[in-house]
Image 1 (cartoon, helix red, strand yellow):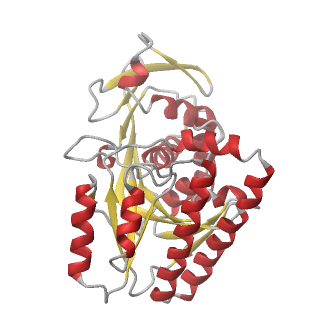
Image 2 (spheres, rainbow, N blue to C red; image 1 turned 180 degrees about the vertical axis):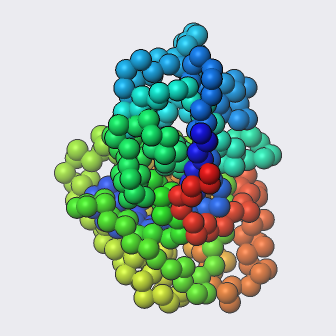
Length: 349
């Protein structure tokens, strides 16, 4: 028995933070994929392998449905097997109890930068949660096995939310399931709508070279949002998030660029008010430089490092884009050779 599944990473185009308040967000899938293979073996224990890490194999057993007991645990294996905690949450969510030993290969190598070996901020854990949920469900060992792509998404979202201590909106999991460009609303019903990429809208992805923690910023936001004036000031971000989606659906690239410019300005103010540091790690400098070259630049997702995206129109000269790239390089940024991935969850075997 051998089953494999893969799911793509993502970047958030608009609606970060506002999506937690019920505003719509837009995200696009990226052409790097997490791949999971579940294969039956005659080994004594179950195994999990993370290719590319020093400790490539860790063993465990399952004596009770949905619960994992790690073998030879010395208290440090989680650092050497970084996907282990996520595996535990997915296993528990699906209530897995295999009748024979499984070897699970959890491959997220495409999310790592080849030059620095640092992880790119494309949502590897959400993509892995989707691929792992799908592969385990097909083994027949899960009591709560999802039967449809929608069910896979719901189970993966629940497991990933538990993995993040209940934080996050679920847009990363939704994008991994569906691929392409989506509009996502957390409330009232985690609504997902497929969108088209507008003709004439050009985009490029930039990496700061500095990893950032989404969970840390969400924790800080929770503390700030207890203040009533801070909650009220979030309404503007919600309004401009809705405007970006409305403009995107009309499909005129020039209007979308202007809507994104307004959105980015409001996001910057939102970050400053809460001291979130969304535009730290060089994003602020690129945001300002882009304005002088006819572009709109913004950090993606929680910000504070990781990935940013620049938008423009075809009439923006190549010289201007080149000059922007030269400035970006001075602040340690590098353009990434990644693009839109139209496919979401794929069953490969």
